[in-house]
Length: 221
Picture 1 (cartoon, one colour):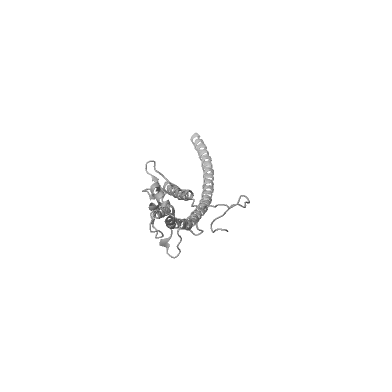
Picture 2 (cartoon, one colour):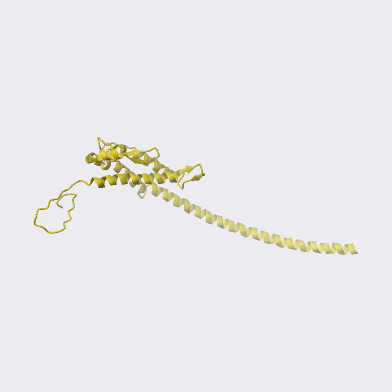
């Protein structure tokens, strides 16, 4: 608790003065930003693969036509091009070095990213500023996080969609059970009819044999 936000791990006891140099870990900040872009691209690619239709081989992704997945993909792409009023220098992800592409992904521009790293105060505002009073001044990363948190909430779009799918599966299972009962009843009825008809055919066959015998006897007379 010597300095707010700083933890010192002391290795040994000494009576001599100790010089402590504190500097910004720009390498970690840059890695975190590029990791964010990579994670974003992974999500977008997954959604694109799952919702696309391949006309060449007539195959569709598992989520092709699913309104929730299509909505998520559209909103993610919209957020990638969104702006923030938190910084007067970096208003969009593209100004930080992450250029939105036509497929919805983000392409890292090393030159612009390095330039943004040279102004960490404005970069922090652009990416991580929190402003509950003015949503337009929320950082770009904060906007993205709030969107994802909303999706993952108990009553969010993903939870609601999963509940709807579970309900659909339950209804389908019930219909299958009902159909199986009807099929079993139909099979029982048909088998009974077949058995009765088979018995009737046996009786008719016996009657036919009897009549043939009788006719043969009459012809001999």
